[in-house]
Amino acid sequence: MRETILLVDDEEMIRDLLSSALEQEGYICLQASNVDEAFVILGKQPVDLVISDIMMPGRSGVELLRDLKKISPEIAVLMITGLSDMKTAMECVHLGADDYITKPFGISRVVLTVKNMIERRCLALEKKHYQVSLEFKVMEQTAQIRKTMNELSTAYDNTLTALVKALDAREKEVGSHSERVMNFAAFLGGKLGIAGRDLQELAKGALLHDIGKIGISDNILLKPGKLDDNEWIEMRKHPQVGYAILSEIDFLKIPAEIILGHHERFDGEGYPKQLKGEQIPIGARIFSVVDTLDAMTSDRPYRKALPFDMVLTEIIKYRGSQFDPAIADLFLSIPRKHWEDCAGKQFI
Image (spheres, rainbow, N blue to C red):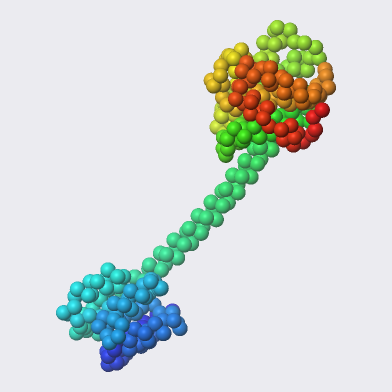
């Protein structure tokens, strides 16, 4: 493609001389006798390079350069100056001129300078286009990676949910105890100001809280009567079993801590580590309250669901012993309907 050069000089003879020499080299040349005329031409068609005299009647070549670089920085500019005006020539370079030549000049020198400037401009444009293309490809690949990660995360979540549903079904749970507890925990955690990744970790910990029961035999887990001392010893291992299963998985390390502590008590009388107060992870302290809510308001093989008012009585009774008092107080301040919305059912 032939490059277009705009010659701006108040002396017609110089414009014609430059135009003749550059057209012989295959360039398309346009002429303007002053800055205003130059901008009229620039507004009508694309130009690759401008050759402008600095000293002209009316607006100077410096003003042309300054305004041109503001609106079309990709156009190369070659300034022509007298030997006595080198200071202005250097000012033009600082304003963005790509090069300058001094009068009197040789035509061959001008042609060589123009060729070099056009070549540099082409390389600069190719680099810019490559960078834009590269940025676009990076954006595309980033979007694809994000989409893949989201799909992978969804697949993880669906797999975990399916596993938990299978465990709930094994224990003859009505509905999905683990999903309800997850919803309760996320809701209460949000009220406590937990957000973002931390809230997601809390929800996963609540969902997977009983994963360790996969290691408990059916004879103990499904026993209709009370467990004896040895059976209780086995049953109380399930937080540690769950922790052992999940703590080796990077994205489940924090939920694993919640699982390990979900049977601890605020007064230190829980298990397996007898942690006390704020030694217990916040997620486990939240879980303790909402697990009581779901356990009492759900049917069990040995009894029907209990009234919501009995849950309130239980939370008040064990506030400060089984339950973190601050979390218990927050729970008690939340209207019943909000908990029913989380559960997807009405309490009795």
